[in-house]
Length: 153
Image 1: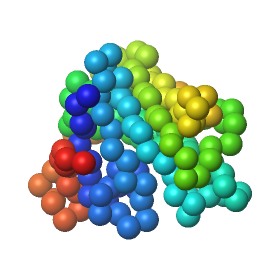
Image 2: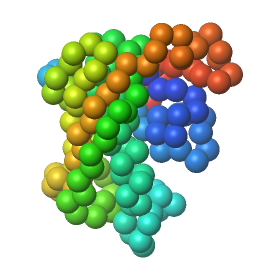
Image 3: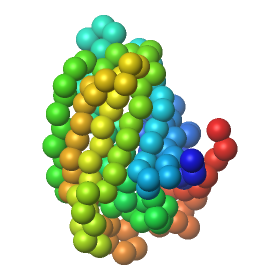
Image 4: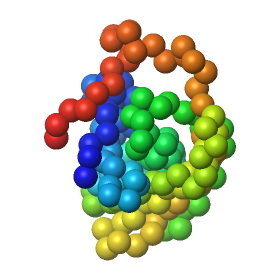
């Protein structure tokens, strides 16, 4: 699998964000995005259960990463996010996120993401409408505010 870039301060993938999830994403042979991780107990809502907002954030990032498999510098924002929670997501247990593009129309893309639990069971899923970020909005030259690159695990 090919590793996709991380940023410095993103809540989901930022490697320097002390409060973030520090997720890393990979592209598989079927052009889907994958992430294997676990959520620490400090991301819980109820004891032993990941807060739903954190689950939605991870699914949202997976949607955005799905459009990056062909172009890691293709940044899109979420225009619509529909999340379905099927079962509680446990803390401190291995989980897997998978995302794919359903329909790509250039400036707009429809994507889907799924979160699987330690036994491979579907725990949550999302569909999203991703919108192209206006040109010039993401400044790659501002290394203090934004860093984007592949870092080996």
